[in-house]
Length: 336
Image (tube, rainbow, N blue to C red; front, side, top):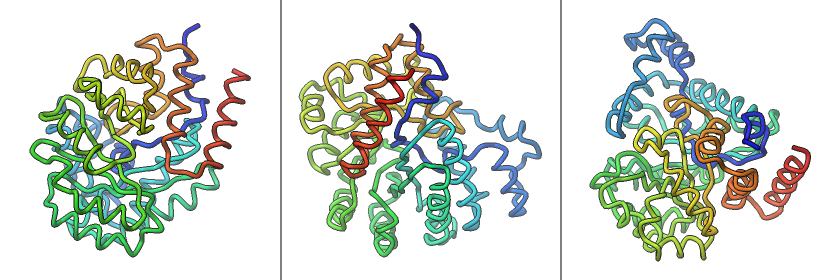
């Protein structure tokens, strides 16, 4: 029996790979532009939507970063995060670990505290939606390592409001090793580690190897090119390192949305799971991503459920909290 949208929507799940700036929907972008008196060159939601046009990572980033100009005040970051968390709740996301990119804001004159306080307030208020959330601060890999160092210095006084650090943006000529010191300092401060290994990039396997074997990340974001190296696949399987795959954003680069790789990893016991990445830009939130891969590759109910289990098992919450969510998941499956 085919997996339905209703099943993927109601399935309890954790979202571990979502960029909060990538949830900026056209209507909110227009609202914030008007509120902050910023001329973005568009007057209607439809006009904003037309600017969300790209066909590779570079063209996507050329749209993505300028869109952030509408985020100016603490309330803007609150509104952005709370709007996402409301949508996540309707997708029955029970736990979120969301990325944010402080350098994308501090580099244009917005204070670190403005960004963090707005996002954190939204997380606190969203508990009323029966969803718990945490923040992962990402280093922008196309900025300097010194910029990453300064950002970590700014962040550490607020480390209790962070669950971990990550690495994102343009991977070309920006290997994980460039940020080894910053990752080591973050780990020493008690923060978890993850890093993007975007699909089909130059030196992809070498970057994955650096992230896993040198940096010591606990999760790998995207990372499905790892199937090209069986030894590394064995490494992540044995060490229970989670991989976060995002089918709809993958589809912009790979027509098969890396579904075959996800299934191969799943069959080998790798903790691969499904997420939404930048849902405002790639046409769907997390339940849409589950449904996209399930329908295209005829996933069984057991495979879909395993993907959801993997999302909880590779999250950075306590064993007790994981057990509660996994019990909730089992109960959902038993009645659907």
